[in-house]
Image 1: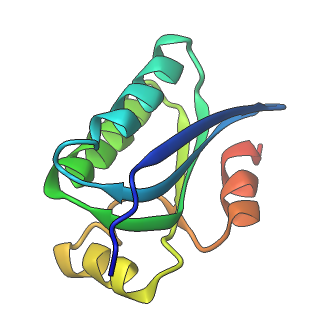
Image 2: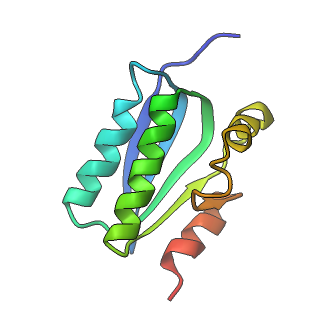
Length: 119
């Protein structure tokens, strides 16, 4: 199976920022996710959805980045939600390392958007 290069796209939407992640967040490229999230936090964007539905691989450094982001959003009382990876094997990795219960997850983009924009 070929590993696809990590692609991170930031979209501004009414009331939130959407970050779409696709490909492999390996130990070399995970920083792209970190930079995208941190840039939006620096801009005081406190409602964010990170769409991981097209994620094909994530390293421990990538997991740490997601955990750090969740902690930062909690600290500033922001709203953050991750969209679950569509690939079962990738989601199983998140459940194996235990972050399925501590990160804010949604099963779809619409559900994640509703979660961060709810009053």
